[in-house]
Length: 158
Image (tube, rainbow, N blue to C red; front, side, top):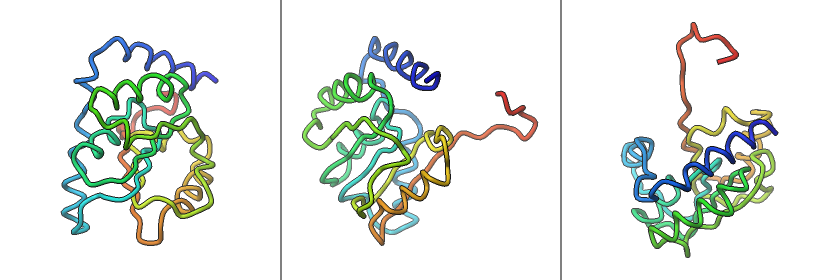
């Protein structure tokens, strides 16, 4: 509950900012990743722990994706922030905000790509989340994850 309240408050504050400024450095990984695998990101995409929707919205604007499912456990992100940002960038037909849990994405292989930018470490059980991701990825699908890192001297409470 503390985690959900933290993110709802964070996204309420973000609603006061311009949607023009949602993109961050993490989207720079997409062209690099595409060079590594030899193909562009396309098809169906899940933005896991989407927050403000920046990764999914960037893909909807810049790649040939059919659908981007933006999944987050924050009511504010899914009901207000992602729809506002998708509308601002005129990609609301491609973006599908979904309120949900990382550990129960689905049992059918649905997604060509799953993006997890700074969200996997928030999973209540990483094993269950990774199992859910595996079930949800198509056989030739990709997980693109970017997680924060800290020095080894960082104490656990930080």
